[in-house]
Every structure is written in C-alpha cells, then in structure tokens.
Length: 309
Image (cartoon, rainbow, N blue to C red; front, side):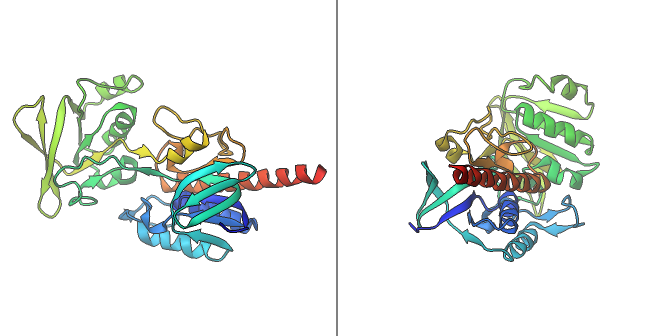
C-alpha cells in the first residue's frame, strides 16, 4: 500500500471509465484507473458504425484513440482488477498488486455477454453472431435473423430488429412469452415469429453463420436458415457494487440518480453498461463524463466542509 490517497479511483477501463478518467484528469484530480483497456467489450468489437465522428472504425482502434487522449493527463492506469473494497474514512481498494486509497469511486465495470457455450458460437462471433441488436442490427437490413432469449430485453431487441429485418425468429427456452410490457407489440408485428420450449444446439456455417440447429421440447434436431443470430441476456458486473452496499435493480444493474450518476453511497458513482439501459458506446461516454463531473463537485464540497471545521 502506498501513502497516496487519490481523489478518484475508477474501476473499469472501458469507454465509460476512460471518459471519466479524461474528465478527472482535465479537472486536475489525482486519478487512478483499474482494468485492462484491451479487455473491454469495445476492444473486442469489430466494425463500429454508430459512434459519432467515425463513419466506421474498429473497436480496438477506438480504444487506442481514447487511451492516447487520456495519456495527455496525469492519470495512473493499473491493469489489475479489484478484489475487495473497504469503506472507511476513505475507500480502500485491494488488488493482487497491492492496496490503494481513494476519496471517491466511479464504478464502470460494464457487463458480460450471455454465452450459450454451444458449437459454432465462438467460431462465428462477428461472422453472423452478435450480442447487441442496437449495435449490429443495421448490418442485417432486409435479412432474416434469429434472436435467442426471453424477457423484456429480448422483446425490445426483437422489436428493434423487426423495424430493420425481413423476419425475426425468437427462440425461447420458456413455455410462453415472458414480457408484460411488450407482449401486445410483439404479437402485432407480422414479421416476428416465436418458438417456445427451445434448446439451441449449434450454430452452423462455412465462413459465416448460415443456420441454427435447435430442438423443441426435447424433440429431434431441426434447423433454420438465417443471416444472423442475436443472443440476448447479458449480466452486469456488479459484484463490487454489492460489496459496497449499493442498490441494484432486478437485473443486477447499479441503481443511479441520473444525470449525476450518484448512488446511495456518498462518494460512489457509476457509469456505463453496469447501470443498465442501452449498451452503447455513446451512452457509456456520456455517463462517464457525468460521473466524473459529479465526483469533482463532491470532492470540492467535501474539501469546503473540512475547511469550515
């Protein structure tokens, strides 16, 4: 452990975390970022065509641009993960490489995709397999796609895709529609079909994905031709948030007060995919900026209170 107490500790080095780091650095706050920038969902993405300012850019290239800009400021990057956080007079962050203290924390730990762990899933990643309808739906305009998932998130994605694609086939492992808010809209869409009690067995193709193999109610394998598959149902990386006592919603996302990105724990802010909503780079960047500004204001007020006493 060092004697340094950082103004802000940012947990997570995706677009939300790096943006928060940029704003904190520009505000002359002593800042430390934990995480590997090359391990974020953005770094693993293929073509990005919906981030303002770039007609098309590789995810890894955008990460490198973020990082280069961040390098202009005195922000320490530690490619380590937080094992524990202890809340006392300051926040003590414990890693495999040591312990670090900070006066405030921004959690931007993102989310992880739901993986089916079936043959063909990894082979056709970004070759017909996507985990984000809003990100990649435009690549499938006028085509047939399969959406694997259930619940409100899958329903919203199916409705979004229905506005772009020729046909959307929903494969659900549940016996019926599991969405109250979007049930009528789903049923009203002529280009959405649903199969229930489905177990997806494999994703098949040559260079790109061509078909999905599945079974209904344990019956014989069937296949359906498709141009793409969208897998819905990711989970937020909110374990550390639970340890801090932050309130989570029913999906495990950190509950925040927008637009300040404050949480119910004083001095703790959150931004990006871990707060729920659409998983988009622009959304993460905006929330990262808001969280950083809020952290700066919090630290200023805290310093003013100490000066008065």
